[in-house]
Structures are given as structure tokens and as C-alpha cells.
Length: 214
Image 1 (cartoon, helix red, strand yellow):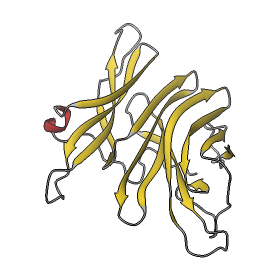
Image 2 (cartoon, one colour):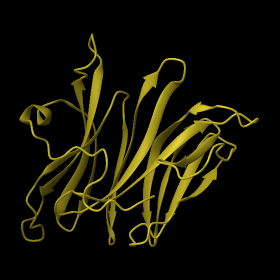
Image 3 (cartoon, helix red, strand yellow):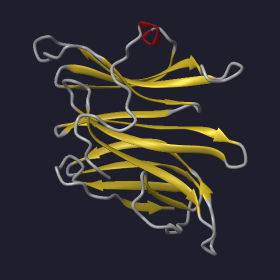
Image 4 (cartoon, helix red, strand yellow):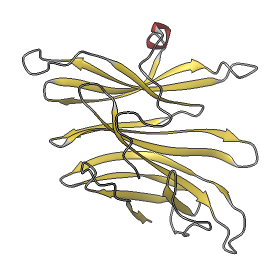
């Protein structure tokens, strides 16, 4: 886990094309915070690199003014990522701040779905990413040999006083941060569901998550 300032690796800047904003919205989640409305949206596009039609999902976050008396921001939209598989999304806010999470990935022949999770702490005024953390599943052979990628599918994002929880399902037998700082082979876990608990997520010191699997 690492703080990336207001720019996170792999984040696309403000939507530069109005055509993106006109794409059909296939999934959406919303939260209101301090008189402003925030949403994370999945828009379906066509993958320009594919030889035939394949969907490409664009994940973006958007701000809107609900009450001009309490919300003074300038509405905006920022594209966070793209995915070749249907993303799962979540957004939450409390007194400490605003957070959005999503799972994204693609299919690889011979490996199956490679799906990861990203969680962004957002600046409510600019929608810039103040902190970005990630999760990744793995297949780790018991003999410590070469393994392969697994998948982490987002189900829920929860904010609590002093910590954040990201939960979902796991394909594989190991889960780590993404990018991971561990050496191979990664720790093997039991179960197909996980909870990642991030202590002091809104603090200034990066802290690795605690994992519970079942």
C-alpha cells in the first residue's frame, strides 16, 4: 500500500472526449456527502484494439451539486480505469472522507479471468486520487513452484471509524496487495471469500491490510 499524492499510477486524467460521457451507463453507485452528490459509473464502450466487437468498460467517478448552499464544488468527471470484464463498483463516504472501489480485469487463455481490485481515497473537490491501494488473487502450488494469477471480485466497501473494509470473493488460494511487496511463494490461505481490513486508511502513514479468509 502506498500514498501516491494526487496522481495515481494507471489513472487516466479528466475525460477528454464528450463521446465517453455519452456512452450507455450499465452500472452506477451513488453517495451524498456535505451537500454534494458523488457517483461511480460503468459505461460500456467497444475495445478499439479488438479485431471484432468486444466490450470495454470505462469506470469513472462524477461529482454533482445537490445543494448550492452546502456544496461549492465545480462538478466534474474523472475516468479511473478500464476493464474488459464487467466491473463491480462501490462508493462510500463518512466524516473522514470519500472512497471508491472497483474490480477490473480481463480473460487470459490458459489462466482464466485475471481480476484485481483498486480502492481510491478521493479529494472531494477535484476527484483526484489521494491514496490508491490494490488487491490481487493468486494460484500458489503447495510445492512452491510456478503459479498463476487468480481473481478478486469486489462485493462490499465499508467505512468505519479508524479503518476501512474491502470484501469479496477470491479465485485462487492466496491474496496479497497489488502490487505486492512479498517474495514468491505467497502465503496460502483457505476459503473463497475474503475481508481486507485497512487500519487508519485516512492517516498519512501507509499501512498494509489485515486479511481474513473463509
